Length: 166
Image (cartoon, rainbow, N blue to C red; front, side, top):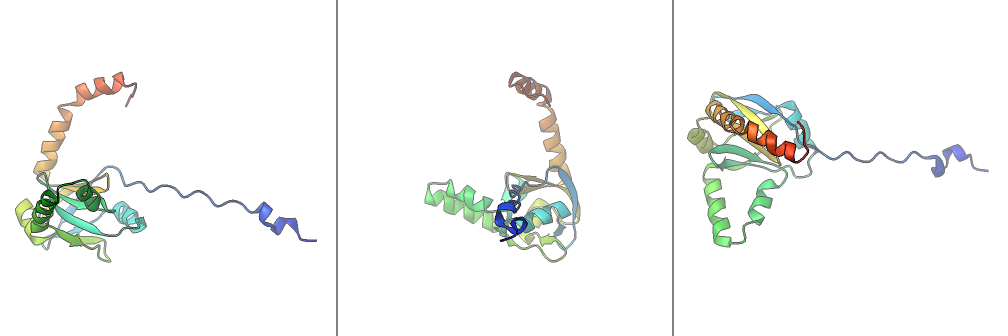
């Protein structure tokens, strides 16, 4: 007779895989004089777990952005007009390109992007949101902070009306 302790009836089911969640918060990082940006360890850990390893860096709305996990392709797919899609990719590729994370956890920002954004040899703030890492130079970070804070009171009222209390 088979020992029932070893039978599959007593096997512990595998734990459900936890969904991946991008890191939250702002992370100060240095862009060195060669344009290398050391990614925070939490970003590296998250990116390592993604099935899509491609990173595309470009400028969008005045900020450098790193598109991860197929987010660039998803954005392009939403553009039905092929000419508009072509123009957007053309503009994006003028200053951007695919980048890789090196063994030290750094990416090298494209030279034209660094030049236009004034990113070399600066401490920047990184924020990961919806599969996009936004790179905020000090002046843009302060500008965005002021803009967000100017809405604090009205945002609190709207959230309270929705029954959400932060």
